[in-house]
Amino acid sequence: MELSSEMWKHLPYLYAHPGIISSVEEVARIKAEGYQQVFVKTENSDGQSDEERLDHLIRQREETPLSTPRTPFSEAIKTASVTYESAMTYAMRIVNDAKLGRKIDYDTAVETASAIVDSAVSNPDTLVCLSKLSSFDNYTYTHCINVAAIAVVFGEFIGMSRDDLILLGTAGMMHDLGKTTVPSRIVNKPGRLTKFECEEMKRHPVYGRTILSKNRAIPSKVLVAVRAHHEKFNGTGYPDGLTRKDIPAFARILCLADIYDALTSDRCYKHAILPNKALGIMYGMRDQDFDPTEIQLFIKCLGIFPSGSFVRLNTGNYALVFESNAQQPLYPKIKVIMDKQMRPIKAWDIDLSTQNPEAPDSVEITECADPSDYRQNLMEFMLPQ
Ligand SMILES: [Fe+2]
Image 1 (cartoon, rainbow, N blue to C red):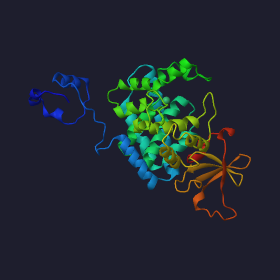
Image 2 (image 1 turned 135 degrees about the horizontal axis):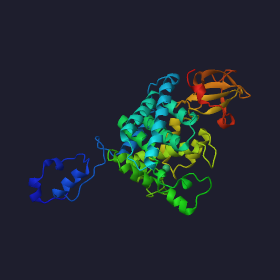
Image 3 (image 1 turned 180 degrees about the vertical axis):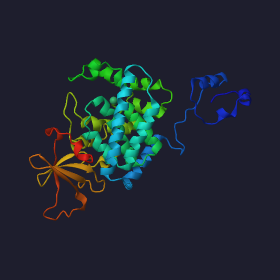
Image 4 (image 1 turned 45 degrees about the horizontal axis):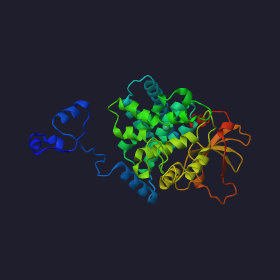
């Protein structure tokens, strides 16, 4: 702060201490008292910035995997489905509000993100599974929720605080709201975008921040993450071409979740890529799009066969992965649901990690299968009957 010694005597000591300034009126009052500059403090109560904290968590998690007791999938999936559905309703509402120029409802965002965090803590595989198998098929809305859910699952995996997870989930739900400002003929164009269309599309993170800024209750961490969710590790991203050290922590996580969901979703111009292949592609994007350590941990978090993967077994039967196994990624928990001809059979569960691999009847995953070959809603197999 810049202030004359004369002023110092008259100023209330409040402003000599850090605090939150939450209204335009307050800014005007401070200006009227003669202050010309302020320092904006971005570090947290533990003295670390978000970026330092993320680096610290990632280093820690590389060495010691977090082992949190989880609620069994079959129990946790009921609550997670309800959460996912209400998150979808919220996503529809904010996309509509953004289109109409209305203020974005932040209180419901916090409630929704808190429920997503609860599910991630209870059993993260439920959210990963729902993000791939839920029957909602409108990409605009499912993508908002999937990015929020996957980002929160990863944040929880590396040990982020609950408060940060809620902000991260909120940023995930809101990350693409700026697309509502881009003409829909560009957003939904099935073919290649022209140079002009591409430039316009690349403005959506900036538009998103502008939309969210109308609600002053939305924290700056969310605004900053939304603006930077397309920045890349090597500086070739947009809108600011930031490099690794300058990309905000939340934006780096959103970017991982965003690309994973985009690759594994059906779009008007491409078919969904299988989850394990998508992770392989993302690993190939290390040093360009992603920090190599962060993408490795992301893969560790989701597993070689992420929850919701449809797989073929050495027995010829087909199964769904419902719980990944961070310690033994090739041996997740699976639900056998179809015979060799892909006809539904009475389902049963197998924990592949508890089998003796030498036993002649041991079951193994031979490959990931394409669920789009089979048009039934696979999520029905995962929900309690
Ligand atoms: Fe985006």
